[in-house]
Length: 215
Image (cartoon, rainbow, N blue to C red; front, side, top):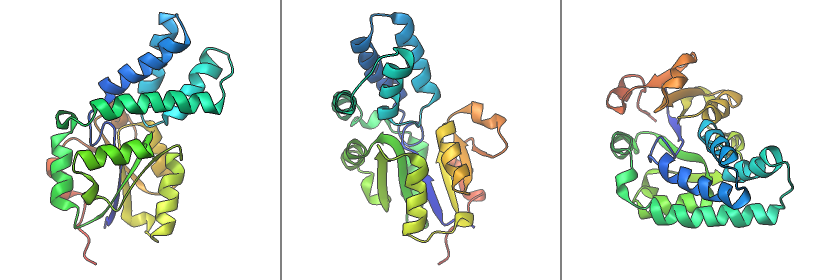
């Protein structure tokens, strides 16, 4: 029986990839004139969709450009990114309707928590502006790693790992579920179907596989 659902945000609740591509493209072009590196960085960002922007920015400078970057500069770039995201992603057109409908219908029957690679203050701002905050017990994001976000919530609320699942669209989400001993449900990324875990084709039938909380 599932009582607790951890939700990824980007790609599961909101279709934000195109907007975040723009943000990371701008960050990369501040760092290099090489379009090849910019393109490679965007590919890296997309493949690691659930990874924190802080980690991605550091990877760009240290691994791709082989240069140093201070934590202060990482924070400055991350803040510039956040300002753009707050401006663009408050538009309800980016919400994934089938996910939101499921959340609205079932939030009283489960413990819902958002665990995201998005920056936490930005994440809470967007959820508030989009009218989503009331559906979740907690809304948490980076710079804390998703593995630790899940671990801390499981411990704080004394949730059973056997009664908890994580719904996400990336390998980062899959790994966060795996290391915490909970089931992973893939969504909105057909590449995840190749792995041996549950995959959600549509939220319309999700109640068939998830039993509502009875206590």
